[in-house]
Structure formats: C-alpha cells, structure tokens
Amino acid sequence: MKKQLLRKLSVVMAALMVICSLALAPANAADSSAAVSAQSYNLPDSMEDGAILHAFCWNFNTIKEKLPEIAAAGFKSVQTSPINEVKVGDSGGMQLFGRGKWYYHYQPISYNIGNYQLGTLEEFEAMCEEADKYGIKIIVDVVANHCTSDYSAISNEIKTLSGGAFHKGLEITDRSNRYQVTQGKLTGLYDLNTKSAVVQGMIKDYLNACLEAGADGFRYDAAKHIELPDEPAVDGKNFASDFWTVILDNDAEFQYGEVLAGDNLDVSKYAALMKITASAYGEQVRYMLTNHRTMASIAKNYKIKNVDGSRLVTWVESHDNYCGDDNSTYSTIDDQMVRQGWAIIAAQGDTTPLFFNRPAGSSTTSKWGNNQIGAAGNDNWQHPEVVEVNKFRNAMVGEDKTVTDAASSNCMMIQRGSKGAVLINTTANDANINATTKLADGEYADHVTGRVFTVSNGKLAGTVTAGSVAVLYQEETVKGDVDGDGELTINDATEIQRHLAEFKNEDGSPIIDETDPKVMEIADYDGDGSITIFDVTAIQATLAELT
Image (cartoon, rainbow, N blue to C red; front, side):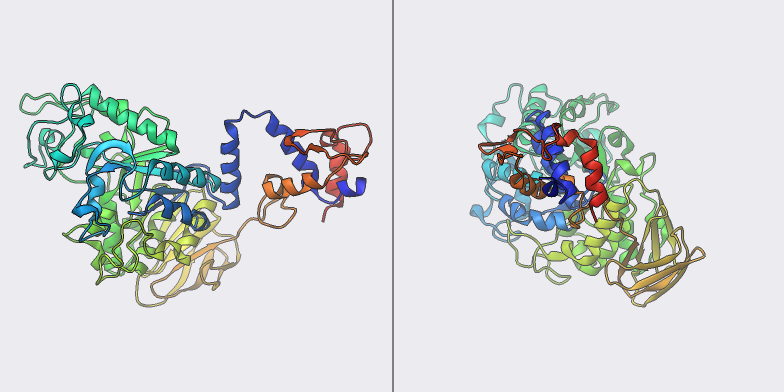
C-alpha cells in the first residue's frame, strides 16, 4: 500500500483537498471550479486586470461554443450586446445592416431577458454557467437611458409605470446644455425618466435578474445622457437625481459607463461613480496607427483630466466607431493596425482594455462582411499577436509600467517592471532595437515569432519586423506541477478524481464512498494507524521520492 502512496504527490494532496472541500458551503463550489479553470488558462482573478472581448452581435449559443477558444486566447471577460427584449426591426431580419440592422439591440421595449437577435433567458443562463467553468466573466450591455423611438412597440409594462416612464417631448439640440442632454430625446429615442423611483426600480430589478441569471458586470450605454447626483440647475431647472447611486448599488464585480468625451463635460464626475470609457484616447491611438508611428508621450496619456487609469476602459475602436457613418474606423485601420493598437493599450496594464470583434469577412472595403447577426465575427481576436499580448498582460499583473520610444518613432516599448516588455512597430520598415531596459541579461524569445532578442548590460537588442508586435518575457515554471501540465497538481480536478478512484485501504475497501464521492471512508493509506492526509512524515517521504 505504501508503494501506491508514493507514486505521486497529488495522491496525498488530493485527499487533503477533498477533506478541505467538505468544510466549504455548497455555494462556494462554483467559485472554486471557476478559480481552478481560470488558473488553468492563467487568467487573472480580477476582471479589471484582464481583457474584455466585445462579442459584438454574437448570440448566446455562439459565445457558449467559443468559450474554450476565448479562455485560450487570454480574455478574462466577454461583453455581450444588450440582452433584454428589443424592437423587432425589418420584419425580424438578421443582417447586421440591411434587412436586420445591429442597432435594434439598442432599442429596448421591455426589461425582460431574451430577444430575437441573441437568444432566450435559458440560453443566456446556459452560456453564463458554461463561462464559469473557464473562469470567464460575462458583462451585459445595459441600455438604461432610453427605449425605442417606436412608441407602439414599447411594452405596456413600461408605458403604464406609475408617474410616467418618459421625459416629455424635449429633443436634444444643444449638446453643451446638460438639461437637454440628460432630459431630452437622443436621436428621437424615448428618453426614460431616470429621476423617477419607479423607473429606477424597473432598471434595478433588471440588473438583479441579469446577475441572478449569471452575469458578472455591466456596461451602461449612453451613460452621460443620464443625470448625475450633483447636476447644477440650468435656467432654473433642477434635474439632479440619485439614479446612479441607486443603480450602481448591486453585486456586480465590474461596472462601467459609456461616457464619451466632448460637450465640455467634466467626465471625472462619472469616473467617481464607476469606470468610464476613454474615447478620446482611442482617437489618439488611431492617430498613431494611421500615421504609422508610435509615440510614448501619446500612448501613456489617457486624455482625461483627474481620472486614474484604473478607472478607465480603453479601446482601439468601439462598435460605434466601427459602425458609424462619420469617420468610421472600418476603412481607416485594418486588422493588422488593430493588433498594433491592442498591444499599446493592453500591455500597459493600468486600464481595462476592450477588444471589439469586427464582423466576419469584413475588410477596409467591406464594412459588414458576412453580415450576420448571431454569428461570431472575424478571427483577429485569436491572432497570435493578440493572444500573446493578453497572456503577457495576465502574467504582469501588479508590475509597474515604463513606456518609451525604443527606436525613435519607429517602435515603442512597454516594459512591466523588470519582468517583460512588448515592442510595437507600426511602420513599413523593420526596427532595429538597441534600447535601455530593465530586463535581466540573457536571451528572450519573442512569444509571437520565436525571434531571439538579447539583453546585455541593460541594453535590449533585436529586430521588430515591419508592422508587427513582439512579446518578451520569461515564463515562470509552476512549483508543485507533478504531471507537467503547467498547473499546480493539487488544483487539477482530473488528477484528483483519477487518483482517488485508484486508492484502497489496507482491507481492500475504497477510500471514498462509491455512492457519494464526497464522503471519505478511512484514508489510512499506509496502515500506520493515523490518517495519512494529516501524516507529515508520509507527505515528506512522498516529496523526497518525487522526481
């Protein structure tokens, strides 16, 4: 029996893990499973430390199907399109544009989960349950500012709310007028009376329903069109409200608002309540990409006064940038440029970056590509440059950043502590690097291409090929990885189950109850009269013999 015990450390530690798990409440079981999976893919614990994949117009079943690939690509979170009931446009067509249109997502008719474009409540729940297995979090896009512009389509549930659901008739004509911006119709959409406690209750109930169904976070659409608690009166009209105070008081792990720059708005007031978008910064990133240059001074300036990077969600482009009619990004930056921009925003680590998934088959001459709501977009989010930058980001949590120009304006270097660096070349020429670095002396293989860079006496040397991204760091080995699969064996559920199934007590009886694997029988593997999992000598002997 002792020979069996000494086969693997995981045998001893597996039993310890089983005993410990018995002390946990059943509610913790899912959390434990998710943590194990997140560790398997080296995803960070915190949503803000990880990257978000914006699964634009993917339906729930598509997201569920893609979860293994999403985890393998290093994304911590997936952002959905709005999941509540929306106006059925164009006779229920399912094209992104044409006979369908993506923007009906943003025209609520009720605050019940499920719509004709994305799927049912049950499908949403199944998707969230599956996401938990991979340690992936789900962010729901919430449209709380307005309903559809088609009043006849709005549910009676909303129309009959006590005190009235909507502001009365005001159109936004002056974007610098906060009363109009927060109390008026945005492009004709019926503007919810967000000052009303009844309307607030409706939205709060919807958020709680999303959380109950498995959501982990929220993005608030058109957030700057909803008033703040301290709005000053305009022309004698008082319109400040406690909407955000009420709504944000929920159990979500991550919440941010779409607060676009401009209109002389002090966005720091929103940032004091929740994370916000850094739209002006995205413009600066795209400026570097379209001009085929990189500048450290631009890359590290988030263009928002009095707001720390930790309060920001950054992007190369958003769905509005991509889909808009004016200055649409689809024709100005291609997939390669998107990857370069992604490296700039994701490698720095202090903001939370969002990767917008463009439609499948799209290009700089074809905005809509395959033009299908519900389907996954193109595969740029799985490109090795994106994946390796994500893995770099996840490995560098907690490390400070240094952003420098590594070769004039030809190449930028983002260093994280002394552990690693990402190099971005946005030009059409190779960049030969000879830059000061904090990395320790030695050779570093680019995680994307395998190309070798060297560090000697504080200088990094190597070549970043034209239009590419290089990712440099030494991966740490996992201590206690008995079976060599890259993870701590005591947290490997498969190993635990396999070994527990094999072991017997001295009398040949199983150490676990075959009818209920959670019940431990004797657990005296070596027959010395003590319970082996608490036998320090047995554990030490196992450690000594393991190779």
